[in-house]
Image 1: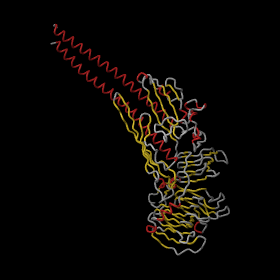
Image 2 (image 1 turned 60 degrees about the vertical axis):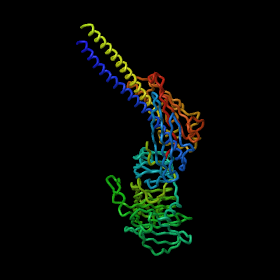
Image 3 (image 1 turned 30 degrees about the vertical axis):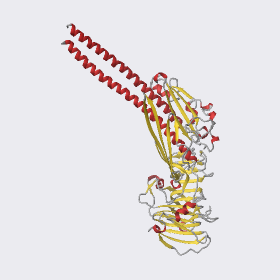
Image 4 (image 1 turned 135 degrees about the vertical axis):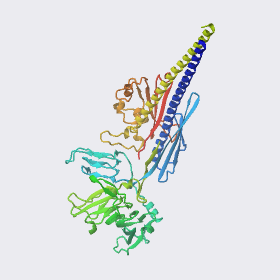
Length: 431
Length: 189
């Protein structure tokens, strides 16, 4: 009896130990599988990332790159298959699928990893302030730049100017301090600073003319002369337009037109000449003109050009937030520059709600000089893009005190067909 | 206890001993295997950490950011880049903390047992990880436009490949090497 009891106890122990052994073996096997999986995934991801890096470089150097003759790259025992879509269009999409296999204990373990990204042309309106040439001037303590800033030159700062958005430059940064009482060299980049970043300044007037021809409104003198176009936007969604040959003085009788009918795609373009602009905008439009010789390619502001509602709401400390009641948007494109007319309407402040694109110069004031009277404030609520900054006021008070506030809606939305770069920026990168 | 019972008891004891020995052997194997797995994962992590560290640097010495002014040169031509036979740290970059560009990691060798105090591996020592790893890396140019195998080329391109090798006597008694590779290409948008 005692012997049988012992045998039963031992068999029970043996069963228990067998279960323990089984679990232990399983644990070991799972841990090994996890290790192998970790190693294989790491390698697969490295291969996919490498392929994406290679493609990003190729597209950076050639926006029309459509892949190598071979679409598979082999590396470290794995491979990546590259796919590039539509590089000749506004967006380029790249996808790398990497496969990595590993033999462990006679078993083949395979993992896939994907990296894809989308590149898109940069729309200039997303900058609060873009200037191709910075020149020798300085931003000084007390200056505040709202929105993303970029220059193709070298940015000079004196003391501690404040940049509320991200700052990028192509040629770097020169920081100067302790001169003229401006304190230490300590510019505040609240949105960060990066260099070198190349955002070439380009304007494709033919493309805008094409868009205006098909679905927009193209002004074009049938006899081939330069044409001046006067546009007065009305808050009811109409525009009063009239024309005259450049250099003459007689405007045609204004025509009142419904903007939805006049331009279905929102683009109003003058083939060559100037535009005279004012009024209250109801809707989303881009207005512009190409140049042909001197004294053309300018957009003259004859009075305020504003939306029905200010795009900005001012909160404490002078900061702004987007006004949710504002649905209007305007882009002004001048192959030369935007000029504020020196007239009675503009001598006591001017309000501009728009993204201003000055391909040949910068926003300027007609006949400005240090002997002119003070004209109040020039309030730009939108975005300023220019070739070279122009004088709009003097320290003795002549001209305007310029206040530029960024319309944050331009981060995600643009006026119709507003100019974009010919190079790309990365808009998404997925791993 | 008669002879029969004695025999049964003896058999039971033999069976129990056998099972215990087997379980004990299995437990030792499990411990050994788990420890080795842990070291393998640590090896992969060390390699990945080195790659990530190298990727945080500039592509080339020419494009490295000036730590004081923040300025960085833009490479427009391949001739701006470091020549293929000069890849590696300059004399002023003998310490790892002074590495400022990707190819400074060419020829890099470090052992976790004698890692310099500025090395991230000094942290692993502090954390009392007993295994000793040797981490090595090579950086060289590759040309994906002509070679789908991404092998080393003896001329400058816009693509640098980094191979990292992690070895240790704790990795399958020194027979295994963790090898990781990644390519860094020059672009900015």
